Image (cartoon, rainbow, N blue to C red):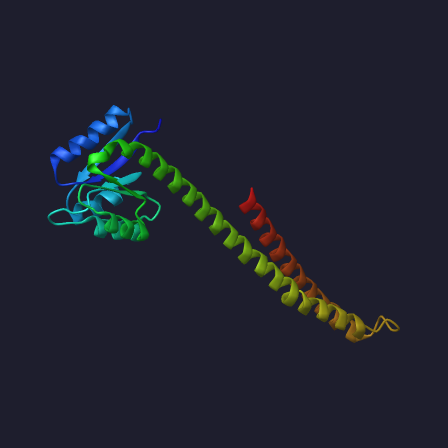
Length: 212
């Protein structure tokens, strides 16, 4: 972990925070941190500190890990969230993971913390990249659908008008006054067709830009 991590701790016991600090220093993990104990401070820290990861106790006097997880999931789903507790219990841990927690660490097994932080950050990065990729694909599908719609519907109108006007043109008598009106209408239909082609080109370039 060469990058300095921004870690947000949710913990009420100073002694337990010191143990976490010690484990991070022992493993030479560069980090900056903030420490909160209440819901209000947690929400503020999410918005202002913008942590890379949250390490939370399961139960605090005025707050709890499940509520913190729910808030985090609603506001910043990409941030990994690890429960660090001595009283969480297997059943609670499994339930929290089902609700979006990345992992959990028992306080008497803090030697597992650093590897789990590493995996959590790696998984979070992969999920973020997948989400971005999925969003790009959705925009591409939308653009392709719009191109298909333009080709199947809006192209037909101007083409039908152009072909119909050509059929009305009096080639035997080019000086026929009706030919002037037909030519003017042909210009309008041609410009409309050009606008549709321009829109298709724009949508195609948009898709190319997403891929680049």
